[in-house]
Length: 350
Image (cartoon, rainbow, N blue to C red; front, side, top):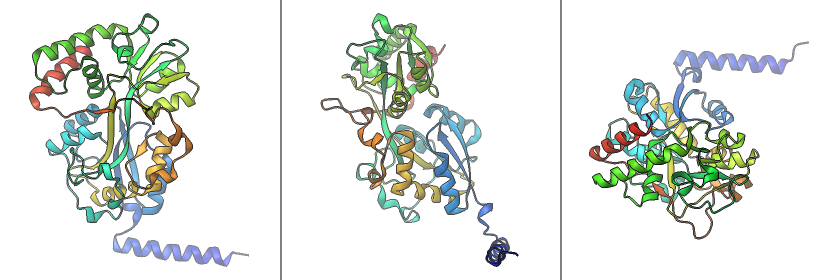
């Protein structure tokens, strides 16, 4: 005997679909294209977004802000609806006319933006972006290989004998150059030729001690032991430790990198309404916390902390010890300064 309730449900579903198709509003026709950092969002959260909105999601990934910028400049602008750049890159995208604006009234969760992130210098008034996750970039050291003081940038640029030739650095221009500038005490975006020469000399001398430039494998080389020191995002350091690497994350006295990643509305987004829906979805505290619990970073959304797992609350990588310096944000340099640093980077990667 047929189940009459199942038959009735099917008939109602068919009628709803027919009506939606007739009006051209079938959710299945709505799409969203995301340009996102690698290993940074759980698929379950994207599935939840689709279930709630009917919007089909596709996602491509990048491993550095500079790689994302190069891709957009090379012709992918107009392909993606949203991207997830860091703070300084938001400013660069904005100044390069690669973003479009929105009104706060378009996002019902806009007021959930946490206080410190409501009016950032890289996007005053939050007219082009919403906060995603924030964290730090420093380095982690294998304690089976080195037992001394690690809270110094010497670990990267003037390492002890035990660590020479066993260092992985990120393939990320902004973060590696800033760490070198902090090591030397040089101001960011300086156009002083002596400063730039000192920076270039330091990087060239340090390069002999590095075994690799690797961003998307930064965690894996620490877990495998292929690197004894690894420049790394703090969330990946947490994951490496949880996967069995006997590492300690450093908060060097010279300083380290702080960052805020953001969801931006790209210029010529083919699915603007879907992009706005996704940005609003990510301002829901529970959804923001789902990213934090997966990626091991903190969210810029009020109320997300209530959904944090203990690994977020207690992580030594996410909670700087008393007395540690504050992190330093990468600055977006003017054209003259950026040309100098681009030349230094190109020479370093040869």
